[in-house]
Image 1 (tube, rainbow, N blue to C red):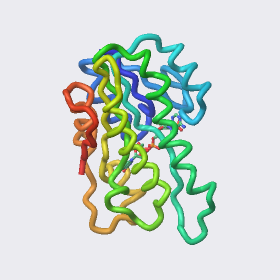
Image 2: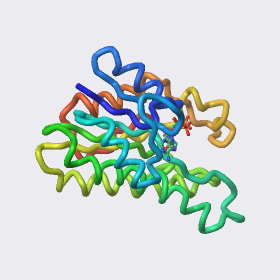
Image 3: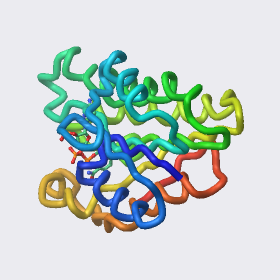
Image 4: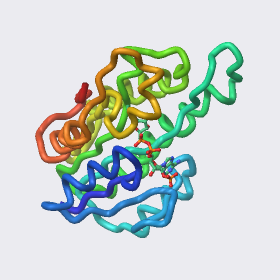
Length: 199
Ligand SMILES: NC(=O)c1ccc[n+]([C@@H]2O[C@H](COP(=O)([O-])OP(=O)(O)OC[C@H]3O[C@@H](n4cnc5c(N)ncnc54)[C@H](OP(=O)(O)O)[C@@H]3O)[C@@H](O)[C@H]2O)c1
């Protein structure tokens, strides 16, 4: 399969690319120079990415920002970062890519454990993740040409433990291959409309 991994140079994206590139033709997309540059918060940038990529069989997204910081002082703009980047950015990948993906192809989006087990500094992530999961469940009912859509909800990644461990007391980090395998289940499997938890 020809598989686009948006955010494929990031912490989780790298693990996904490592796992699937042995069997598939992988195109890494992201903000820094890679195979294809894209900013998912811009409609024009996503359109231009699809023009450059041409045909593809699956798209997995491990990109999207949200605000991390104290709720007490958070502004509307900061809390909305998750909506504009992580939620709308991923929805945009589906809306602009759904007519271009192969018949029977799949979209795999990214949510995260924080919507089920929130931590105080990450309200913007919780809001975005809840939106992504709702979108996936609803969009799956409407996808045409047997196109599937799922979300992977990772726990705290092993490679992010140093950064996020102090904010997650008692939470065991999830090994990177376990998170990558959740993406593989979505891409190579049969599920649709599901939230595949890796935690
Ligand atoms: N790490 C965890 O423990 C964990 C757990 C649960 C959920 N998640 C979710 O997983 C996602 C990825 O996390 P991560 O830890 O892998 O982050 P990361 O290491 O910062 O990687 C994110 C990747 O996405 C790209 N990216 C960010 N914003 C983008 C945009 N607007 N357009 C295109 N590419 C963009 C980045 O590119 P540049 O570097 O070029 O900016 C980078 O390659 C996030 O949505 C996060 O909420 C992470």
